[in-house]
Length: 242
Length: 253
Image (tube, rainbow over all chains, first blue to last red; front, side):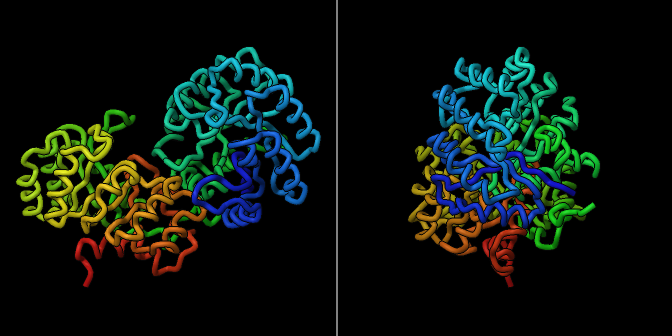
């Protein structure tokens, strides 16, 4: 069974952890049978998007099982737009990542709307950090941006019910449930709400979070073998052309 | 098709004691998990003994909740054993000593506090009074909330405490407190990083960790898998999966 992790990171985090070396990404992938991982640089998420993306580009040259997300800071969109195109031109970056809390740009911010316009134009998938009820605004934001496909990172966090309802409204929203706090029943809730199996993706937040946490969520979700294959790999293959 | 190891539960995921189990209504949750559902879920998850408590005591009526908990603990037929956990309402703490005496007389060894649900954000007079009375009776405190807030209040009392909500981002604070508090323990539930459990074991010892799943409100497999794959020796894993709680409850030997 092929496994593709669509929500990974590379690099150190400012906590009492030691998870920054790329060898740990690969070690954890080997341990759990993860074939490919899409990662963003922790530095790009937390501190300096362009510098972090550049550092990741270097790492990717020697890591064939890793692909990159170019982190976009909506507060510096012009610079991020150029950087995104540069990253994509390497062939090793497959999408964009936007965090909402570090740059303090909410989903409903006009700055986010401008970033969405950029990504609609460029046409690559966006991994968006979602945490809170404003995830419900996404279907409306995608309505007039027909090329934009958004991975709903963390599936809304504590607003997982709102995220599920949003994914029912828009088939270009993909739920990805990685999170330290693994509220029971999030995936069954989303399925019962009507989210098609084609809109679930597998993500881990590794190496910040051990992949077994998300794998446990998948194990507890009660997928059939066919559904499992779709969630663990086929949906990601289709979305990213892998 | 290659079937990955993690998809099948292994013996390394067996849990002897789970300190964080609830049953009953929870208005903010999509469902109200009843006792039968919780027992079945624990059994499926390989959990043998559960320190369990009715949600009624946490949210509405401490005395009635304690009565439900004791009844549930006495009614188990097959399946995981329920060990009753008591509670008192931190908004109604005058005369709490007598209520704790009643709980102790009924064989209740652990007292769970619900500061989040009861709006207690720190060392209020009621909170200090309750923990003082509980520690004086030798009760084990199951403490929710931020260990940075409640740890310093509980330190220096010789208390046995299990922190139920230690997030991996707060690990450095717990390690600094636990160095000087042999009775301080935390659950592994939110030690989600690839080195979280390992860091506690290496820094202060496996004696400071226990398993607490928060069944039925959290998925259990993420937690048993993390323990299964933790880079610790089997003896330390056994302590975390139950040995430490067994000793705490005086069930060793």
